[in-house]
Amino acid sequence: MADHFNLYPLKHFASIVADCMDLPLPGEYEPTIPWVSEILKERLGKTADRVVLYHADAVGQYIWQKYTSYFAPVYKYTSLAIPFLSTVESVTPVAHASMYTGLDPEGHGIQTYTRPQLTCSTLFDVLIAAGKKVAIVAQADSTFLHIFKGRELDYFEEPNGLSVQEKALELIATDAYDVISIHTFDYDNAAHAFGPESKQGLNAICLEADGFARIAEALKKNEGHTTLLTYSPDHGQHPVAGNHGAHGSKQIEDMNILHFFATL
Image 1 (cartoon, rainbow, N blue to C red):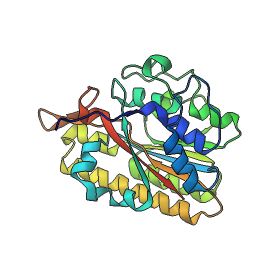
Image 2 (cartoon, rainbow, N blue to C red):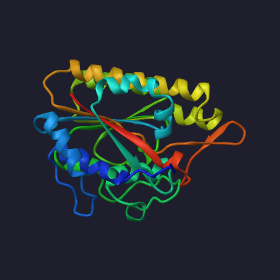
Image 3 (cartoon, one colour):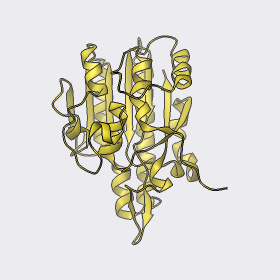
Image 4 (cartoon, rainbow, N blue to C red):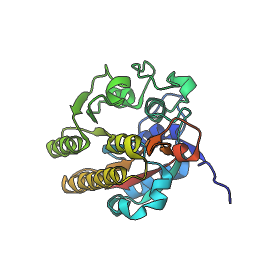
C-alpha cells in the first residue's frame, strides 16, 4: 500500500485551542475540527482555563511509528492523537505561523525560511485581547522569538532544551500564566547534524518526551485548573547523504506529523 498524506492541515491548530478555551477567532481563521473539539471539551468537562503547548521541533510521524516506545512518556499523559499535515514549505517559520494564525502560508505571508514579525492576527493576539496572561519559553534564536515578537506577553529565552523545560516548570509553579507556549529544537539540531534516526537524534527525542512528562506531572500537581496540554510538532525530517537530515520538501517524512492532546 502506498504512503498517504495526512488529512488535516496544520492550520486547524489555533481554532482547536481557542475552541477549548471558548474564545472566538477571526473569521479568516481555519475553523476547528468539530469532532476533535467535542472530544476534548467533553473530557475537560468545561472550558480550559489553562493551556500549555509543547512544540518539539521536527518530530515526524514515521519516527513515532518506528520508535514508538521512546514516546511512552507522552502516551502516559495524553488521550487523543491527531495526524496533521505540515505546510509547504515544511520549515519551522512557515509551519508555526500557520499553526498560530489558522492561515495558509499565502495568508500569513511566510512561505519560506524567513522570520519576519507577523503583523496579522495570531492566537497570541486573541488570547491577549481576552485578558489571558501568556508566556513563550523557547531556546535561543527560536522562531517563536522572531515571528511572534512585539506582543504584550512574556518572552523567556533559554540556551537549550533542558533549560527551557526547567523554566516552564518554574512558570507552572508560579501559577501566573493562563497559556504557556514552549519550543525546543534539540532533536531538530541533532537530526540535521547526524541524521533523523541517529543515536544523537533519538536521544534528543527521549529527552524531549521525558520533559513533556515532567511538565504534565507538574500541571497535575498544580491543582485548581482545567488544563489542555498538547505535544505539537511542526514538521518532520528526512535523511540525506552524509548521515545528515533535512526538511522543507513535500516528502511524506517531512509532511506527516502527530499531535497529542491531554486534558488534566
